[in-house]
Every structure is written in C-alpha cells, then in structure tokens.
Length: 248
Image 1: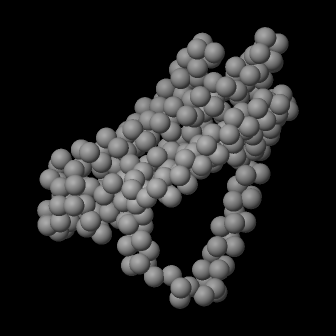
Image 2: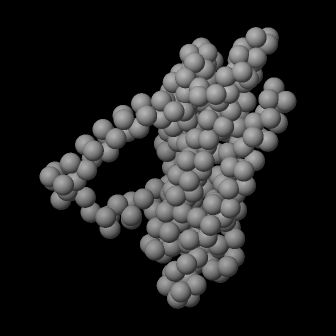
C-alpha cells in the first residue's frame, strides 16, 4: 500500500503543485478589496463585517471547488490497461490500487482545508482584525468534498474517466437545467440575499457553539465516512469493468 500511494503521488505531482498554487491564489482573493481600499472592511474587530464574511465564505467555497476539479485527475492519470491487469493478478492488488486513489483524495481534501485555515489566519494578521470563524465551514466543506468524491469515484472506476464523467455530467446537467428554469420562470420573491448572508454569518458562529448543530455535524461526518468506505468497496468490485474502457 505505501508503494502504491508513493506511485500515485509521483504520477500526480504536477496536479499536487498546481493545487497548492491555485489554493494560495484563491485564498488571497479576500485581500483584494483590502488592498484596493484599506477601510473597505470597516472598523469592526469581531469579524462581523458582512463584506469580510462574504469574502471569507467565497474564498473557502472556490478553494474547495478548484481542489475538487484537480482531484478528478487522480484516477484518470493512472488509467493504463496493462498496469490494471498486473494489479488484478497480485494478491489484493485491486484493493490496494483503489485504496491508493481513495487515500490520495483524502490527502488532497485535507491539504485544501489546511491551506484555507492557514490563509484565514494570515489574512487576519495582514488586515489587523479577526476574520469570521470559518473553521466550522471549512470542516463541513472537507466532508462535503469527500461525499462528492464518494459518489463520483464508482462512476469513473466502472466506466473509466472518459465515459464515467459523461454519465455523471449528464445527471448534473439535468439538475442545473431544472434550477435555471426555476430561476427564470419560478417565484424568487422568497429569497432575500441580505437575510441569507446574515443567517449564513450567524450560522458560522453557531457551528462552534450550538450543541444541536455540533451533533448534526457529528452525524453528518459519520455518515460521510460510512459512505466513503462503501464507495471504496463498490469501486473495488467495479474496477475490472472500467479497465475495458481504457484507451491504452
């Protein structure tokens, strides 16, 4: 297993470096308004400034989105038919091959979370005030990303990245199209963006203080962990099916 993981890290070293650079860039976006106007974030020292809170939330979301896109290459970069058959002939070879990919996805998500927290702390030092408590949001996004990978990975292992992404994108496109149609023709009067941001900022604080929300997070994290393990076992069973779809 350590050898498989080392091989995967070596194959994805370009993506690994690219992710680190992109995360530093996306997490630096919160500083753009401050560099343009040093008073843009107001005089509040408790991290309650709406614009600062919105920027911190935005940078966290875009960081995990970028990290998720780069994670897509973890499986596709190792789609070689000869290697796949060699691993299938080795004792527990398929399990080790798939486990390496799943472990690497966890590592990538953990790096994203670490960089977000580090840049939040650095931003607070540069701006000279507290930033909204985003650690709870970052932790949730970490598990949300693992949940998405747990859903996506079996498709890629079963149909290869070439066809698996097509199947997945077709399903996602239907959902997005439905949302666009509702946005164009549906009733949006119930949406108040000012209240949405106000409640979202309050939720970020309550994530670390509300007992009910803490228990909800524990249940969610546990559920995602179970789903991730189930996804791994399912991918092991589907692995050889996807090998037939490899181009080389």
